[in-house]
Length: 191
Picture 1 (spheres, helix red, strand yellow):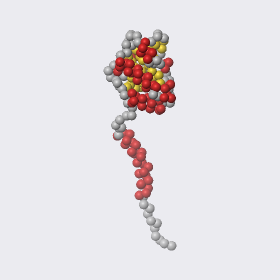
Picture 2 (picture 1 turned 90 degrees about the vertical axis):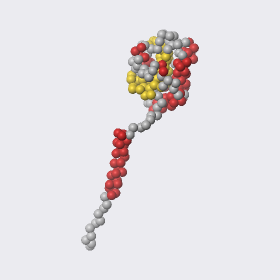
Picture 3 (picture 1 turned 180 degrees about the vertical axis):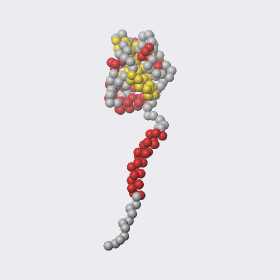
Picture 4 (picture 1 turned 120 degrees about the horizontal axis):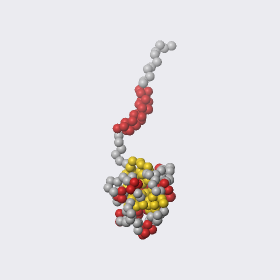
C-alpha cells in the first residue's frame, strides 16, 4: 500500500463552468439597463395608446354611425375637409392601396375618412374611393388625433380594440406604410 495522498483536483474546471452559466445572465442585465437600441423597425410614429370615444356620428348620407361598428378591424383614418384637396385625395388613394396590398388580410383592414368641417364631400371623391367609410366628426373626437401640425397632415391607424396607436407623416412613403401594416397584421392575434 502506498501512503501517497490523492492528487488535488483543480478547481479551474468548476470556475469555468460557473462562468459559463453566469455570463449570459450578467450580459442580459447589462444590455437591458445600459444599452439602448439605436433605431426602430417601424416607419409610422407610435403614439401613446389612447382609447377613442364612441360618439354618435353620421355617414355622408346622414345614416347614424359609430366607430364601434368597425371594432375588430384595423382602421386607417384620414381627417380632412369635405372639400378634399389634392393632399386629401392622395391620402384616400393611399388608404385604398394600402388596404389592397395586404392580400389575404385585406378583410382585416377598414378605411375611414373623418370629415372635419361642414363641407359636403364631392360625389366623385366618395364614389372613387368606394368602400371608405365617410363620416362627419365632431370637435371632441377630432381633438383626440394628435398632430405635429394639423390632423389633416397625417394618416392614422386605430387597432382592433379601438385604440389610436400610430400616425404616418405628411406625404408618407407608401412602401414603408405597407411594411408597417403587414408587420402589425402578422403579429396581431386580433382583428
